[in-house]
Amino acid sequence: MGTSITLGKHRFLHIELRSVPMRQPLVWLRRGWDDLWSRPGASLAHGVLISALGAVLLAIGSTHPYFVAAAVSGYLLVGPLMTTGACELSRRRAAREPRGFDESLSAVSRNPEGLFQFGAILAMVAALWFLVSMALLSSTLHLRIPSLAVALWGGAGNFADLREVVAYFSSGAVFAVVAFLMSIVAVPLIIDRHATATEAIGISARACLHNIPATILWAALIAALTALGFLTALIGMIVIAPLLGHATWHAYRDLIG
Image 1 (cartoon, rainbow, N blue to C red):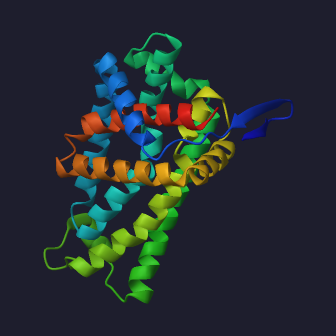
Image 2: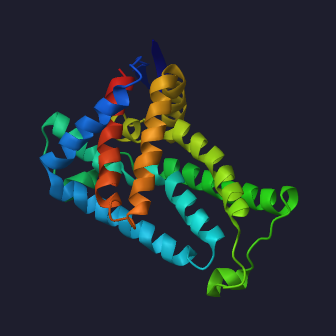
């Protein structure tokens, strides 16, 4: 199925949505694994940076279970943007271009406006989730919200119970699904086809809906691998984050003609 997308006033981007088998995400991971270890230094450097960012967020939020949940959920919501460098390395491997860490950063200069807009949209989704989750906890579930003092200094006597944490994560899961629909192939489209953020988001959503079984499996794999990364105190994320970035490039190549 082909779709023409207008870019600016004079240029058209022809998009062909492809159908893939349900098990195709496993192929994306295998290809991403090959990309990662074909030039591991640059890929793992991105993994270290992404893991370090996650560690900082968890350290900031460690004063209360709510803020740990917020840090994890926010990390996941903006995760697609953090894999831009790995996507660029896979693009360069396919194009037989140099693939060092410095070269991976060129993705930003190839379409800075599109990446900035996409990042801003993901940040707005994260901010909206914070507001909705707080409203849900306080008005609907009548659960207590940590005070500013707890946020800054912690509070041993003000911990959330399991019911509250589950409710908090459940509200975040809804927004995580939205972010996934928006971003499955958004970053590769922005850096490879110079699409705008809104165009890339729209195409990503259509690609998901065009391949629902594969999309569900891919989302489950991302969730499982990300959970593994957090369960290993983010050490596993050094490999998992770039792996998912490389695999995203191959998802793009299969889903978009």
